[in-house]
Image (tube, rainbow, N blue to C red; front, side, top):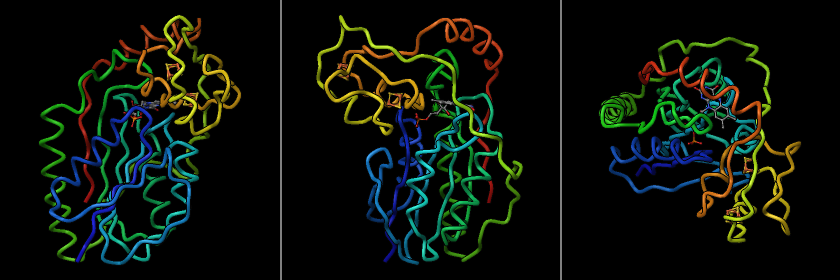
Length: 252
Ligand SMILES: Cc1cc2nc3c(=O)[nH]c(=O)nc-3n(C[C@H](O)[C@H](O)[C@H](O)COP(=O)(O)O)c2cc1C
Ligand code: SF4
Ligand code: SF4
């Protein structure tokens, strides 16, 4: 009997949404590993069907997500690799994810790049994944199920280069509006980099912060945000350069 294993690192929750949509097409019981919280070693079984979703951060999978995924071993479990991006660039991220899963002994059967609302530049890919994306994700999931039944592995070539592009830290500031903060400390608990001090959620250590957006997404008061001159200067040009719709791509 197969289990569906959902694994994702999803600071703004769109990658989680995509992984869950794929999983809905499989009529098996499921387990979830949310890599924002889960930081342990784990081994899966050959019968498992593992759906792994990572957002794309500057052309790579997030460093912290990668580090946590490295602790999960496949034992030949079937795997579907998904990188989810904000309608700008995929670069080497999907290749990196597929490589990592293979290195960790997952049997990769399919891969995809999906498009979601940009978690930094919120004028890009608004409302995505939308109905058209979901329909394509459902078709892809059905093909994945057929592939698993046939025992075939991933045949398609994944775009990207090795070595992958260098990690890039974005220069934008994250700030907190003290007048809005309700001191619930949710941002402190969720931050995967421990960049928000336990005793002061207004502060952010920008040397530790990866700009992942988890604190912005979780804040019930909308108190945390990108800010500063570099961000304000970049926003209009970035949003206009990436306004043309890109479509998800599927590799079987
Ligand atoms: C630090 C950072 C870097 C990003 N870099 C890219 C990128 O290179 N290309 C792109 O299209 N989107 C990029 N995005 C947008 C995210 O990939 C996109 O919004 C994704 O849906 C976020 O997933 P999540 O909602 O699961 O956090 C970046 C977002 C962040 C926070
Ligand atoms: S402080 Fe930085 S690293 Fe921590 S959750 Fe917020 S954006 Fe992510
Ligand atoms: S999540 Fe928002 S309201 Fe809660 S402590 Fe952090 S900034 Fe304040």
